[in-house]
Length: 381
Image 1 (cartoon, rainbow, N blue to C red):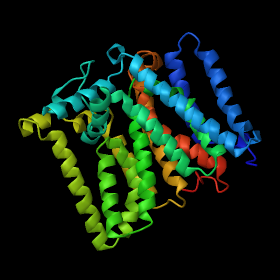
Image 2 (cartoon, one colour):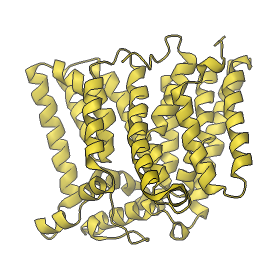
Image 3 (cartoon, rainbow, N blue to C red):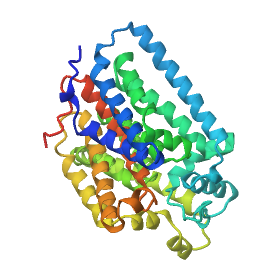
Image 4 (cartoon, rainbow, N blue to C red):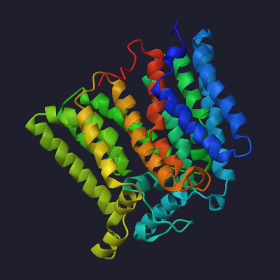
């Protein structure tokens, strides 16, 4: 039906395999070659032979929902059983300390993670973590919730359960995602939320009423104030449409996004004793200084230019995945040149989990490539 062949393996699938291979190499040091070969063959054969599996749609639906339930319970189990303080990953504790500070009326950026690092979480991410800390006592359960969000997004974006099941398999069979859940990290969850936000923005762009423009401003500000790099997908999806807005709609969008940003920033920063404390401890400085700023700005400019070249909706997702991957890959190569392979991989001189920014977009785009007869037009720049 889908005429699956090796020709379907394009740059998106190579990115998916590359990122997951990095995690296998790093976290299975005694058996990495064996596991690497098995894993890549598994994914390769899954995509090449999946179209030949002919089952009743109800059977695909049953398997789809069973996978969701089982993997969701698995994420709950990992969050409950893994002691975060024993991990050499501190995104969870930075987020949790920020949530605690907001509840207690403290300035969240004065607190260090359990590994004594400053928090790089923007205020909206802390707000998203708050309900999970209040209800379940741990922000780690945000990952379980975001898995359900991703499953919901799969359901909305793809037409049949056969299609939905393949995309679900690509995320649950991803070592990079299992690592995220195990370490209670919010990186991929953040970009699953961004992916859902982009999906909703694209739906609201179809109607240019004042109400829809207000929603666009609200969504864009909330999404941007989770992580600075989210500006790249947001500019792809919003810059060109914003240019085409009427003056009235431009003003509505600006007022809506500014109002939302002010409220979120107030929640995050109003407990600081003074402005100098904000200048000394804030997430924007932490995020901006971890990677060369000029590279990030280059990709911001590139996303603006590409926003004029988008032809079909699927390109918003594929270009987002490609741009985020290329930006992190450049940082990765710089680290390799400066510190060498052993230090970068084994000694964690570079955090390979940054690659997970692009994974939700890559996984969804692989599915769109696999099932859409129009393909993704990746090279139609």
